[in-house]
Amino acid sequence: MSDLRGIPFVFMRGGTSRGPYMRRSDLPQDEATLSAVLIAMMGAGHPLNIDGLGGGNPVATKTAMLSRSDDDWADIDYFFAQVAVDKKLVDYAPTCGNILSGVGPAAVELGLIQPADGTTTVRIRMVNTGARAESVFEIRDGSPVYAGQQSIHGVPGSAAPVELRFMDTIGSRTGAMLPTGHVCETIDGVDVTCIDVAMPMVIARAEDLGITGHESSQDLDADAALFARFEPIRREAGRRMGLGDVSDKVVPKFGVIAPAQGDGAAAARYFMPWKTHPTMAVTGAQCFAACLMLPGSVAAGIARMPDGAGNGDAPFVIALEHATGTIDVTMECRVTNAGLDLRSAGLMRTARMLARGEAMVPNHLWPE
Image 1 (cartoon, rainbow, N blue to C red):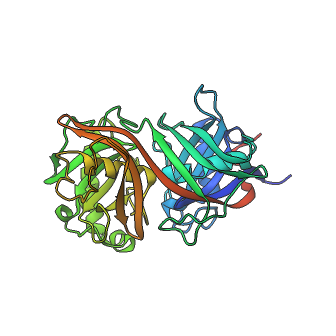
Image 2: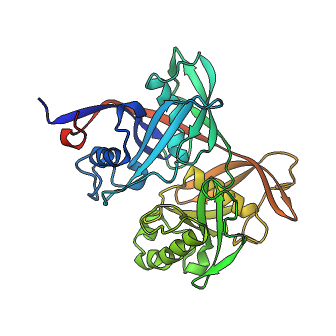
Image 3: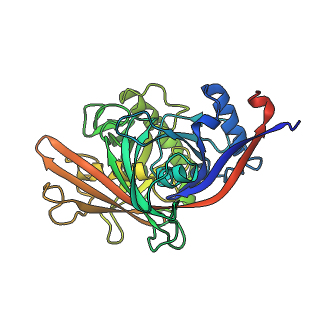
């Protein structure tokens, strides 16, 4: 008898992240055993994840667990797990919008749904946060279409588009856009906006932390003093936001905002939080965009907005510059004397299946 146990999976790139997508029913139901299995599967605890499927970076140690939804609205339940790189740790608190890009196609590949050919819309409930989203993509001959002309910064070449439409973005974890009750506040001498739109975040101006906001992710990762400066701020913000002790949690995320160098509305850098995101998180992009539109936030005076943005008459695009290009967020909102009335936020992503098979984990972690 083998001392390894196989778990069926499809390995997908979703947006600018990647990882195994699996049926929830093929995995342990209790959290402790599930965490042990995912840690072994991804090789967490080693900087290269040399003994697992991980890629030595948080964007490549993500996992998605899918099931048919019992919700009246949704087709698929999406349960996300962020596996650490060099720690044996799994965080189930956040969700991931980039991995969400692959959920619809993966649900087809895993036999959880059988949509008809043509443009299909899959309604997805994000189990971690309770948020909802629609994924729109093409089906041909019963399978997802992966080849196409859509390109996104951070991914070479082009692929078929996956349109994501987000609902329930306000107060994703805390129940409020401004969980501390303040648009702007000072923590440890740094002005921040604690905001919860799609993802709880603590956003500061880059210049207030001694950086430009235009550095590469590699340069930022090498700046140990920067991480030492903002981590206590992040922890205190988490406490103020009602998230408790976030010392070993990836939420809230930390972000910095700066004036754009190109044609974007602003430059943004997103931390995960102990490494810099090489591009930009989908959820983070929505949160940054909302912060840019929010009167009185730390982004006030920084953003360069299109004409008519925030008047509520029509959707508009906010382009955020990140380390390898830009990401566009389609916003529908109205700026009022009371703040920001956000109606919807959407993004265009791509996804591709990279492999399929069985992920092997030690049998003793999950005995029969």
